[in-house]
Structures are given as C-alpha cells and as structure tokens.
Length: 214
Image 1 (tube, rainbow, N blue to C red):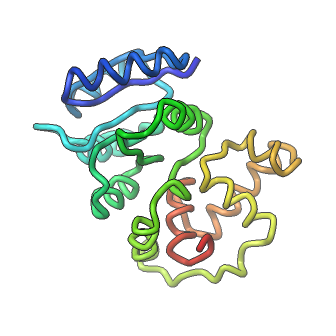
Image 2 (image 1 turned 180 degrees about the vertical axis):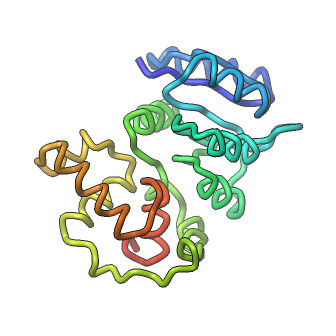
C-alpha cells in the first residue's frame, strides 16, 4: 500500500483528503500544517509520497520543497493546491515537485497521481493546460546552455519520454512498449543525459521547452 503524508494548513482539508485516500486504499501515515512540521513528520515516517499545499502561513510549500532538496530527500512531492498561477507552477516544478494538481481533481485522478509518483513517475504533461505548457516552454535551458536539437533523441527515446511525461513508471513503460525494464531504465538515463536534466521532471520540462513534446 502506498504511504503518504499530507501537508496543508487547513485541518478540515487534511481530514477530507485522508478520508478520500483511505477509501481508495492509500495509507495516510502523517499530517503537517506547515513546512517545518512536514520535515519532522517526513523524517519520522518515511512516506512514499508527500501531498503538499503551496500557500501556508510561516513555512510554505516552496520553502518546504527547497528544504527537502537541500536535505537530499528523494521522497516525491505532489503539489495539491487551489492555485494554478503560472509562476507558482513553474517555481514548484523547478524546486523539485514531481507533479502539480488542483484540489478539484477526482479521487481517481488523485490516487493515480499518488501511485504514479510512488512508482517513479511524474505528472507534468499532458495534464497541464495549454497555458501552463506555454509557460514551461519559456523556462531557459539549464545552466544557460544552448538548446539541444530534438534529433539527438532517437525514436524509441521519444516514445519513452512521452510516456514519462504522462506519469508512467519504468514498469508501465516496459509493458506499454514491450521492453525489458532494464532497457527502459537505460533509455531514461540516456534521455536525462541528452537533455542535461537532473531528474525525470526536469527532463520533461526541458523537452517541453525545446519543443520535443510540442
């Protein structure tokens, strides 16, 4: 069972999300009302996924993402918020979030996202609107490097990249493309290298910026 921590300053919202997830067979192993409390809870229970609100008093979601990255945490973070502001989306993804959903999603969409992130996937596109995609394409290349041509990616690598963008795990990509999972891992590693990306989320962002997934 996938284990999650919910970080939201509103008690009623946390309890509502907990009730919905537990019906869907996702175990909530901790709650926190701001970033500082979240760091303590995550250290104590080691969840599979963190559900993180962005707008919280004192230590907000972006602060939390920054601290988790600074501490070397590899727990995937799914931003779950009421705000779809372009800047917030970009800031959250660039700070290390693996996904970004609004609180009006269905239980099925939320649980699929949780399981996708727990399995190593991301939720960047195509679930983001065209407006978000245009904003993401405006992100400058990492370290100011020149954009890499799309031709650098092989046809198979593009297939893997598109499934990564849809939140597929390596195992799901393996099944979808009839590949050995080890081969998928090799493709993912090569994609990260070619796109100068530090992780799967950053690879998808870079691909969107370069127009590879456009």
